[in-house]
Image (cartoon, rainbow, N blue to C red; front, side):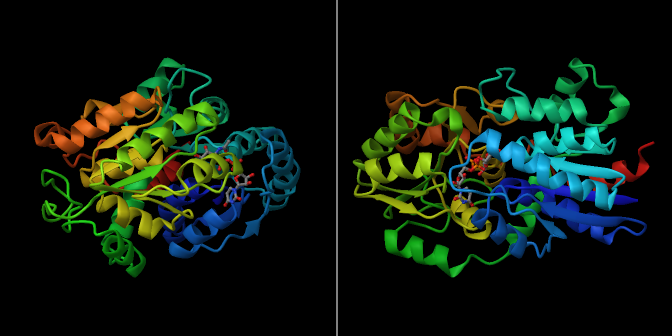
Amino acid sequence: MRILSVFGTRPEAVKMAPVVQELKRMPGVESFVCVTAQHREMLDQVLTLFDIQPDVDLDLMRADQSLAELSARIFQDLDPVLTDLKPDWVLVQGDTTTVAITSLLAYYRRIRVGHVEAGLRTHDKWQPFPEEINRRVAGVAADLHFAPTEWARHNLLREGVPDSAIALTGNPVIDALQVVAKQPQPESVAQIIRQLGIGGSGGGGPVPSMGRGSPGSSTGQRLIMVTAHRRENFGQPLENICAALKELAERGDVEIVYPVHLNPNVQEPVKRLLGNVQHVTLLPPLDYLPMVHLIRRSTLVLTDSGGIQEEAPAFGIPVLVLRAVTERPEGVKAGVLKLVGTDTRLIVRTANRLLDNAGAYAKMAKAVNPFGDGQAAGRIVRSLLNFH
Ligand code: UD1
């Protein structure tokens, strides 16, 4: 069986890495990897970390390209790869433009599509934009859907996908996380922790929690990790987020660390509004390994990312989600994610409460893993091979 995995951005690479490794080990499988490189710098470090050498690299990233330009390039440059390699299956992951266009193209070429992390929905076509429609497009084209959770499986069933075309697998993000969390803390992280005077080995939260090591010291600074890059937050919402961070920094007892996504629509406002603020450290995008270790050392995470909503709960780190809706309600239900949107006042109030009230913090700081058990890649590959 010939299987072509296609991905383009950093988070897709993280979640596909365990699957690609599993395919490599499987006798009777010819596994190929094609990267669109929708992200360039941010993708390459994940490929290196997981020792994946793409067979085809389309190198499609251009500075500040539109979704239409990117889509057109994927259609044009990926099509000959499909006709040359003639795979039996194309595997895609998640909800980026790479995923939507690749699944449509595979359909045009009558190649079967497997969709990893299928069935996530907000049921609002504009949030997240354009991911909600991207993943629905992939869902329509897919022959086999790898649902990470029961809730995702239900979404697919409600849309009329037959049960026999859905495999409940867990999310391979937890497989990847387990591998990376076992590696020693990189020196770059130790340096940040030292320089900023972050307290305790568990991040300095008011209350110890499972998975983070020992309780935080009450003397050191507390670390707040931030990421924000979603398209629907460009403009005023992102400015509101920055205003909230500035206000939180004025407390003086926290250190806000924000690795800034390379998208120019993120870089410009964040550097303008937070470039020179005491207790705020802006970093270039971090490699996956240091990112995971910094999350682990945090007291609190503020993010609009999808993957971090899955990763931080695994360490019992409370997450404030900077979005109006989430396609990951499992974390909200488990009590470790809280939706705060992009309202400056609400972000500041909620964060302050968690920082000042040990009881409120303890309620959120529990290690839960609603998204997987670290065995997803094996299940995905087995159900693919057994599918008729
Ligand atoms: C994309 C995905 C989003 C995912 C995110 C993860 C789409 C529509 N969006 O958003 O779902 O959550 O990746 O990070 O597919 N850039 C660089 N270097 C890089 C990466 C990006 O310079 O390594 C710049 C480029 O100018 C690029 C711009 O960022 O044009 C936007 O990148 P793009 O992939 O279109 O969207 P993201 O905002 O990264």
